[in-house]
Image (cartoon, rainbow, N blue to C red; front, side, top):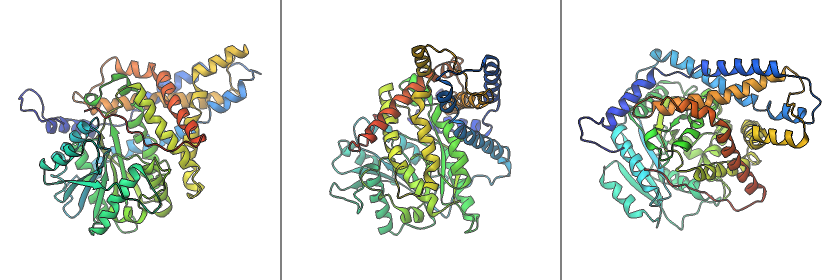
Length: 483
């Protein structure tokens, strides 16, 4: 977030305050789901005809199986609407006077990721201090990284910034690598420094993810609420929303494709993490965790871990069931710079999540929902309309009706839910942007391009699954971060 002295251009603080005011009046829409559902249901019921086609049974399964995830996501949206309807009953945001907040920002330390890192760190020291008088920003990097000099210079910006360097020789007992290894080093350092306490909170952020005054207010509100809770009801982990301002995007196409991500936060993550047990996993941005709880879990998940945030969530489920929450704070990230990076990002996620689903050290009761969600994601290429039409053409059967007419209700629900996620995700990303509005053509474009976005997601997840199946050596791919 750059600082401008122009009287005609709003400063980051003024811009973020406008975003805060807009978010206070935002609720997930119902009409963007109901309208497509009614239209799709009517069209499917009208077009249905009994079929003995070889496609009937496979399609009945493939297009019905996402219904569980869709219903969970809709539950999350309804829970969020209910909470926002009662927002005036919640304790107003106030500075967290008695708690210490540590912002942990791991970075690979490349030159192409440094501009985004600097933008993010500047936002922490600008927006968090008014709500957190006890604050430190730990920039976590590797010894000898190529941008080490520039990262070290960040300390000159503010005394709140500390650069923590992970020695090359550092090894965890379990041989953990990549980001989880760095996180484990920072966690051990906090234990050594006596900071693994209940009144110390660690805010995990990615190096391309900034905050605003709305983020600070919502985070402080959550922490103050836990201080007033009883030991039996206090929460130890919380997740907020990752949004993508238009100004942070260097590619409008991938920005539209990433509308799905904030929608997932207000849907599945709100439903699971927000009700106490994060069986859907969590993401590494705007993840708030008590230092004492993080000290009990650690990050030493072994050399194959490349989705350490989701693995932490499943371990948290086993140790602290019912003790997570969701809060209406937003952080501000950046979409991949091009479709190739978009696919690479999804490939790494799929590669790691498939491995996590097969991790028998975690009881199945904690990984069944994540496994189901990943399996649905893996089936995406086979569910794609282009794949179905190609197969129908090949076998010479154009009737794609399910085995029973009642099944079209599930089909309509699933497709309407997908439309809803992209519609609402786009609205969230637009609200996080400077003007706070969707351009007239963006809703049309994002809905029209859903098949293309689904294909991109499918290619990434298929490549990740193939790498897992071939037992290739894990790689933690970090894409370039736009400034």
